Each structure stands twice: as structure tokens, then as C-alpha cells.
Image 1 (cartoon, one colour):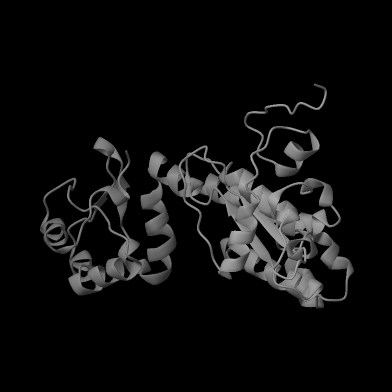
Image 2 (cartoon, one colour; image 1 turned 90 degrees about the vertical axis):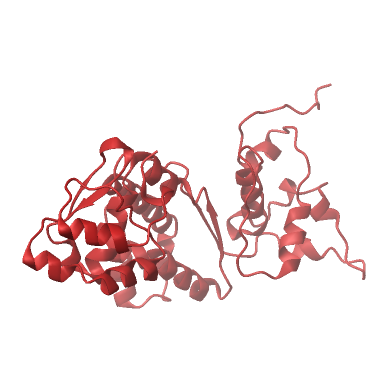
Length: 287
């Protein structure tokens, strides 16, 4: 009776479940299935509470060199006992042999974009802290070590945009092996943007600002009646900006759609945009 496993609810760390002798349904066959597909990218979409996070933790524990020598986590499970046609324990040789980056956006929850962006930079900065041993080696050049120090919570957007890719390169060079990247709850920031209505701000401030800043001049938005709406004052300058081909080209190029159905006033310019800009309802609306 003393060896009876505990049934733990809500524990999402594979190593903790195994160390605590908790009840576990063996899903390590997923490791073999995924590995043998040879896919560079795998998207796992399943219902909530299906076990995605636990399975990703399992994959991390199996492949990550931070868990090298942790055969105790897998002994008795399918992946550890699986033999090749030649009778070899093929997968035992893979355990703990790869650099792994595990990122979770589960806690990226914010009421506006600036807070959400800051939280993402915190996740990235934490990764760099976990791998700060790279600074003590000789694999990084002096400039790369300086770059390493530019990664911190609240870092500039252009730094954050390439920080994970840069870290992958550093780890590949350090270990001379490909890096496995696991991203959990990748859609949480998108859900937060939609639920809090700042997906409109993200679109305008971070795409149009770089690609067509002149369109943003004098632009305002209003979340009244559950919808963000663009207002363009009727001026000669704005009429020149309302080049429909240019405006539509930007929207189509990004595959984003701006809801321009309702406007604060009924000016000529607003009517022009309303009649000619493609719109799809739900993408840029608050719930």
C-alpha cells in the first residue's frame, strides 16, 4: 500500500510527477512518434486540459542536456523499453543529449500592449539568465557578449524580436548540436489582445508605423460600442493620403483587416474608405 501512487491534479511538470511517484498514464510513445516524423516544426493543437504542457515537459526532460543522466524519470516507461529491430535501446542513447529552449507564454496576460510586450521581454530575459554560462566560454565574440547584455526586461522591441533566434545560434555553436525549441501557450498574448481590445493598437502602432507612417498621422481610434473605429478628419492632406490602392495594398499585404464600417462622422473621406476598404468583421473587434 505504501507504493500506491498519488493522484495529483494540476501538476504540469513531468519530473515532479515521476519523482513524487504520482499516477501517470504513459504517453512517452509521443516522443518516438514525434522524433521519427523528422519534422522541423510541429504544432500541437488540442482542447484545454488535454495535457499539452505536461507532454512538452516530458519532451524537455527526455531531450534536454539539463536532464542528462536522469534515466530514473523514464525507467519502466515505453520510450525506455522500446527496442529497435536489431534489439538496441535506441532512445536511451538520446536522453539528455540536446540543448533545449522551453518557453511558456502562459503568464503573458495584460490589459494593454505595452504591459504585454514587457512581460514577453521578461520571458526572453529569463532564458538568457538561464544560459549566462555562455558568457564565460570562448564561443561568443566580444560583440556577441555585448549583445547578450542588451537582453533584459523592457529591452527595445528590435532587440527582443531577434533575441531568441540569436540564443539558438549561440547554443548551436556551444554544443555543436541542433537546438530543440518548445513554446507553450503561444496563443495567450493573442487572446489577451483580442479580449482587451488592443489588437487594433498592435496593428497600427507596430505595422503601419514602420511601413506607412504617413497614414497614421492624425489617426484616432475609439472602442465605443465594442468596436475600434478609425477617424480621418476631412482635410486636403488626408484626401491625398486616402489613395485607395495604397491603403488596400497595405491591408492585403499584412493579411490583416481593419474594421472601417462605422465612423464618428460622415465626411467624404470616411465614405471613400468605407466603400472601398475590404473588411472582415471579427478580427479587429473587441468582444
